[in-house]
Amino acid sequence: MKYGVVIFPSKKLQDLANSYRKRYDPNYALIPPHLTLKTAFETDMDVEKITDHLEEIAKKYEPFTLKIRKVSSFQPLNNTIHFKAEKDPVLEGLSEDLYETLPGERPEHPFVPHITIGQKLSNDEHSDVYSQLRMLGLEHEEIVDRFHLVYQLENGSWTVYETFRLGKDPQ
Image (cartoon, rainbow, N blue to C red; front, side):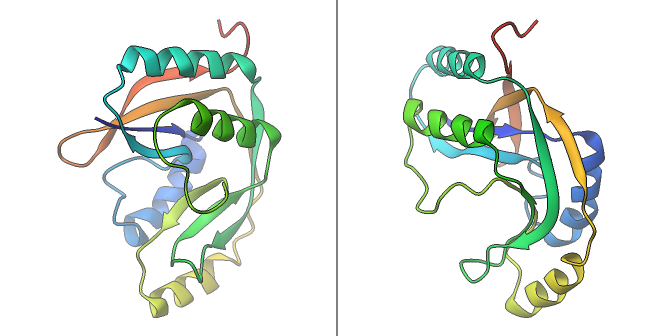
């Protein structure tokens, strides 16, 4: 089965991201706007083992403030446009622990926390859209207190398997 680990932002930020994603992201209908902590991985590992690992990781970290300040791009690597999250030790620690603990390869590029709003754009389309969107004045902050194990369905869409609350006593 194919799994991933993500943070779903607040409805307010999801609505803003979706206002662009419906036009510029072919994966719009497959998963809500999210920040990927661990990219998709395939495994035969028992899901109970995966959730046990995730519960232990969640206990290590306290809730944190997610800060989005600008629209950015991964060009020239690819034509993906995203809301860039400020680096945070909790975000980086979570991602690192997930790659150390769960199956799957590490990505070839370093972890850049972001929420994709456009991808697989032609060069011209990327240039036009990015030049407009980078002018957006983004000042968004929210408290993140959970992350999610998601899995892929047969139709290619993703759904939540389980949610993990950050902190030693997540009640």
